[in-house]
Length: 189
Length: 152
Image (cartoon, rainbow over all chains, first blue to last red):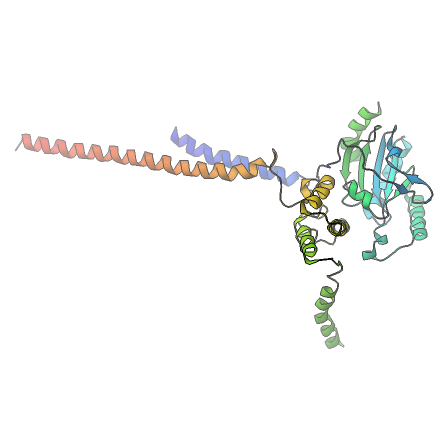
């Protein structure tokens, strides 16, 4: 009996460590649960990137199921997901862009607004335009309120204006099918 | 030419330190608080760096926000809470004690208690084992003596 115990104890410990480390191999350290989940979107008041006279606030999410996609023309991965997002738009998904420019940052050297608009026009005409409109977060304060760590990131926001899903990284067919679609279908009913 | 390049390379660290202090403070406490906070807040983009070390855009933004909040006279917990609301417990290098992290504190305690218990248990068992062996040996000797006494 004692012999068996002496044999089983290290074996059990070994198996436990193996399982623990094995799941560590396949876990994505970038998967941090957003603290905004199930919370209403943070307060903001920002202009349209193309037309500074148009202003948006949290009310743009009310009544419509929306994907909020954080992006920029400087962001390589965003360019990769644009065609897929455009496909989604053609299927009837409402996508709003939260645009920010890292070149507006004094640390990175300036870039003028007309230049940004020209870049956006060029990028969207080349790769497809999935956006109903783009909110311009110049100071990146709203991005910070959303807990954005970089671009691209995508939020699923329900009709009540609550954040239901936060995805860090590009949105592709696989992610859409596995992560978004079940919840999206449930919420769109 | 190459020598000139060498000299310029050697001078590079001077440039680096010249750009270091871009934030101005009202007093020394604020400077200290800013330093402390940027060293203890974790960059959400680059995982194993604090925001003082990281050059990621989000780390720059967090630093600027920390600076703003410190200038506004917010204390340490207020700044940390501000970041926690947005980036979760992940953003601070000191995790709170809750259900998910409880085992971090419990495992060492359980391990210490377990190993002390194990040592005590083994020592007691070894002692009794020794005792029975000694007793058996002693009894044998005693019996030997008795038989020798009976058969002189």
